[in-house]
Length: 277
Ligand code: ASP
Image (cartoon, rainbow, N blue to C red; front, side, top):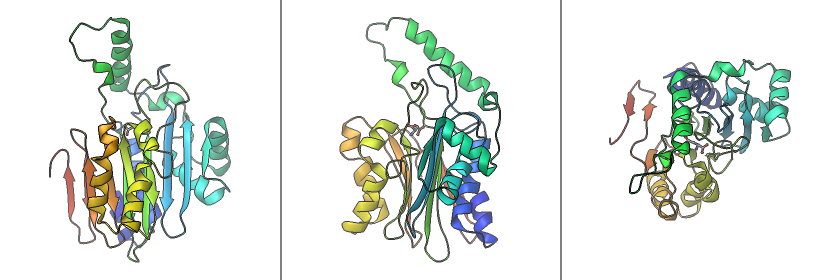
């Protein structure tokens, strides 16, 4: 709704994506901004990226710990720097220079996520019982993303995350990697991914979907299914994507239990889904 409101006011698609993602970053329910998951050292390290499909401009940040809305900093990297991806201390220094909101790292901490990491640390100390499932590999994806198309068929995509629970400090997932977690090209589609980032990087998921639309002339739905249900899944890669074409065709594809998703249309229709349609 936040993104749709921007477009309804005549705002641009990039601001629509940024606004939608900011709402989700500020909401502690999601694994992005406040409420992000913890690293193996009990810190929050945030990744985000944004892209527009007319000129393929993109911006991204990784491993930031004090930037309240990483998606806004990713946009600043795209619009106000000569670079695409800034990490860690350099990204934060750039954030201060361009005036994004800076918070104490404790801002991101929520009780729920802290309990999760404490439980993982406790389980790691216990030897695995024979025949029991290794719950340490059980993931819940809470990364947030948005794709938008404006009245002229220009595409935009963005993704923001705290990454994966118990990740090594310094680990960077797919979300800030253009072509893995995020991609937008007016000649094909806009994509935002969530899932086991290592697989999404290795299989260049967002770009692979866009390439199938562009070169194989597949629908966004077909292209997304081929990639999400294809070799990556067989290799163990779990997750999903939201995909949008310049004409407004929308596809959701996932091989995980569910994908919390929704859309808002120009005519005011708003729908949300958690598991099946
Ligand atoms: N894709 C994210 C990462 O690997 C995690 C997620 O989607 O929840 O960092």
